[in-house]
Length: 80
Image 1 (tube, rainbow, N blue to C red):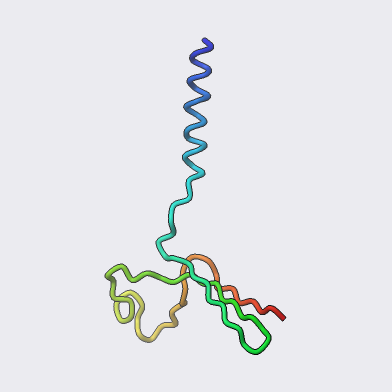
Image 2 (image 1 turned 135 degrees about the vertical axis):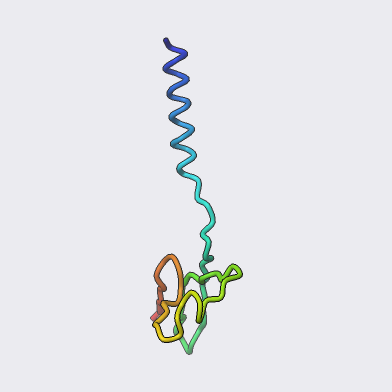
């Protein structure tokens, strides 16, 4: 009985640990930092990957507004 309970606990723990693995995002994130005068401007954004697709005219029609970026929202921060 003890072996069965121990085996079930070990089996359940492997599923819990497996769920914690962070896979890389399909669209990579980037950070851009530039000093303008005395102020540091930082832009954090996610870039969409084309992966061999035709974006404009096929995936996104020419007459529609296209949201740039992917995954997380774009964040702009200023140091002063």
